[in-house]
Length: 369
Ligand code: OSB
Ligand code: MG
Image (cartoon, rainbow, N blue to C red; front, side, top):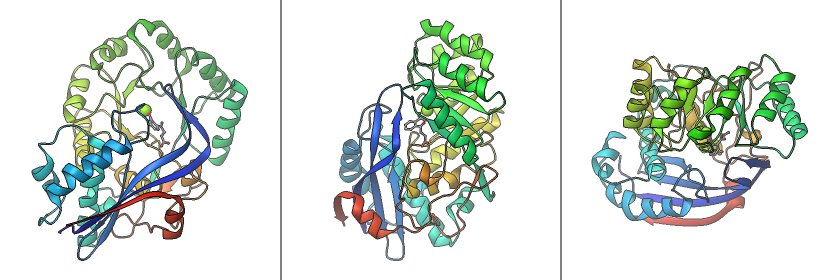
């Protein structure tokens, strides 16, 4: 495969309601989309970087810079065999996993198109469906939180994740658990606690949570290991696991019992598979996190989330959880058993709706050889 042209597009779309984490509240999403052209195929990818510096140091702006100035010049016009060649040409560049992922993933999709198989098949996902789940932002009141939970449960979501932060935690968890004693319930703190908050975290043990995601700082695998030893509830790491090395030492240190794999956080599908395999060998299950993906990014993580060791419900909901109108032809729907279908067609297996894409596009740049 030889990449001859890449279009960089930024779209801006409203989201359904709002989404609040321990670090910010958002009402709309901007997403960087990439369209790769080879003489024979076209592949779309989505970069998961955001506009703010809340989740990562990468932003849409830094991603555009890194992709344009460093990644594309290293691979465009070269004869590439597949995703492994991304690392031959770009392995020496430091950092910026989200930017890297948006380019490396294209080589997976192009490889799948060349082989006339689905991305899922190329990755080794033999499942028809993946298990869905929904992430609920911090709400203004417990009443609103219970309304949200009820709404998603009635749609059939098999897992509820609540965003929490210090002071907006135990009361919310207790209210939801009292109302729904048996649901699969977990929480995500996005780094908001310190090891000194151990009592507040220990107090969560009585609610039979399936896990507590990323309670402490991203670079604090050490204190996560101290914390896990004090908790009955499994700790799940998200922001802390930026590469295979982090996954290996987190498991060796017993810093968590579960890992949330986000391909964008770890520089793409190849690295995500590596971390999946490290966890499988250690007997530690994983699940697939989300970053408000449009249908393009959603199709990609659905293809990944069917690998064998994705044994927990994923943060992959139907398209309408965030978007009134998705940019792909057939938005992803929730099946009555709480699953979502894995696309079967060649490559990503979804078609972009160009009219809808155009409506939301606020920036479009063409990069040619
Ligand atoms: O921490 O998992 C997270 C969204 C953006 C950034 C970080 C996170 C999230 C979510 C939403 O929890 C997951 C989704 O439904 O896409
Ligand atoms: Mg998280």
